[in-house]
Length: 156
Ligand SMILES: CC(C)(COP(=O)(O)OP(=O)(O)OC[C@H]1O[C@@H](n2cnc3c(N)ncnc32)[C@H](O)[C@@H]1OP(=O)(O)O)[C@@H](O)C(=O)NCCC(=O)NCCS
Image (cartoon, rainbow, N blue to C red):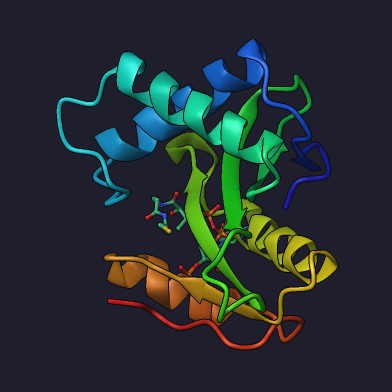
C-alpha cells in the first residue's frame, strides 16, 4: 500500500466523513458491488446509511475504519459489527468492505482487513465472520485474512 494512505478508526462520524464514505459507497455500488443496495444508487440512500452507521458507532455496536489519502480523502472503508447475539459474544462480522475503484489493487483492501482484524481482537473477538454474496470478495477475504483472529466463513 502507498505510504500516503493512512488507516484510521473513526470514533465519531461527522459530515465530512459522511460525504467521503458516501462517495466510496456510491462508486462501489455503481461498479456492481453487491453490498445491500439496488440501482438507482442515490446520495440520499448513501448518506442515510452512513448516518445510521454513525449512530451505531456511538452506541458502541460497530467499528468503522477508513483509508485516507494524503489529502484526507476517504478512499476505502470496512466495518466490524461488534454487537452479536448473547450466545456468540466472541464473534465479529466484517461488513461493507469498500475501496473506491480508482484506488483498487494497491493493497488498501488488504490493509483495511488487517486493521479490522486488529480492532476485532482489541474488542475481544476471536471469530470474524464475513457475510458476502460476492465470490470475488470471499476469495479476497480468505486469501488476505491473517491468523490473528479465528477463521473467516461465508454465511450464505
Ligand atoms: C474487494 C475490495 C475491497 C478489494 O480492495 P483492493 O484495495 O483492490 O484490495 P487489494 O489491493 O488489497 O487487493 C486486490 C488485488 O490487488 C492486488 N494488488 C495489491 N497490491 C498491488 C499492487 N501494488 N500492484 C498490483 N496488484 C496489487 C492484490 O494481490 C489483489 O489481487 P488478487 O485479487 O488477484 O488477489 C474491492 O475490490 C472492492 O471494494 N470491491 C467492491 C466491494 C465489495 O465487493 N466488497 C466486499 C463486500 S464485503
